[in-house]
Image 1 (cartoon, rainbow, N blue to C red):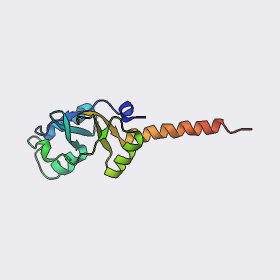
Image 2: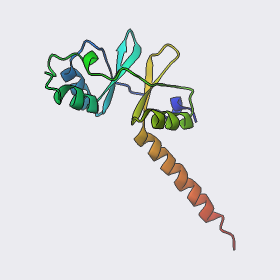
Image 3: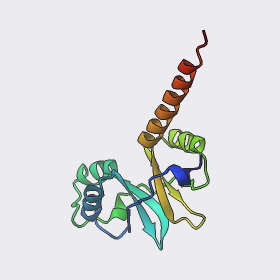
Image 4: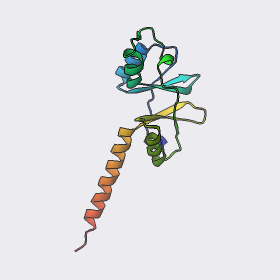
Length: 139
């Protein structure tokens, strides 16, 4: 199954010049823990709730005036819509993160995949496999 079929389609985006407070408000309003930072519709970074806590609040920065670009994660790892679920699992593991944006060929965000999403998917697959094994026990 490709990520394009599986991923969360709604991606919240912000721009680097917006403030940390604006981003935190977006996170709250959209019930997400990460926002993709874009410039000209191209993903250039990600801001997570952890970034807000460790790079802004813990360092004494004023969230009302601190630009997102100063505290976002810039070493952005992304996936493509035609990547497979296995690619997502490997990439999340290799990057040591909980979520990765999915982008199209131009770098525009088209979705987000999270570790939680993948765990739920794999648990469902394992449950279905276990059910098939139980039903085929024989006499």
